[in-house]
Length: 141
Image 1 (cartoon, rainbow, N blue to C red):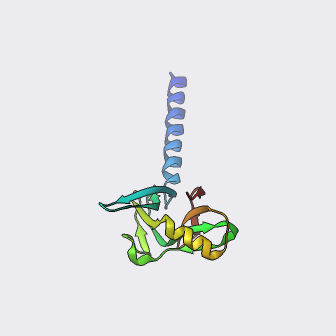
Image 2 (spheres, rainbow, N blue to C red; image 1 turned 90 degrees about the vertical axis):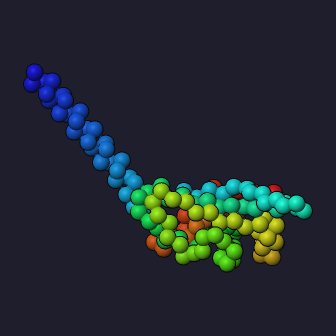
Image 3 (cartoon, rainbow, N blue to C red; image 1 turned 90 degrees about the horizontal axis):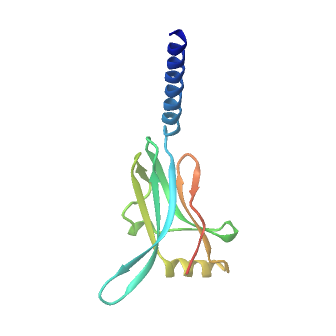
């Protein structure tokens, strides 16, 4: 009987520890940055966009201070904030997402003006406390 109570206490203590550890992992903010293609169409034409999506899977809000695409060689292109649904600085609450878009042809033009031959870009969002959080690099079409 004593052995059964001891084992039950050990199982309860271990499960409580695991629960607290998982809760601690999601304290604060935790951002995931992804980039995808988007197409806007109307009766006359269609335009290809790159869309950066940032999701805060943590519990605490975080201040987004900027966004853009980092180019080869460490140069970065920041985007005109006037045309976006989410203007920075922007507070992204826990469990919420925001997205930013740029036309692909505009991005390619900026790369050519910078004089870089690489078409590999890495999306990022700037935050107040850590600098930048990056997504996976992608190649422009």
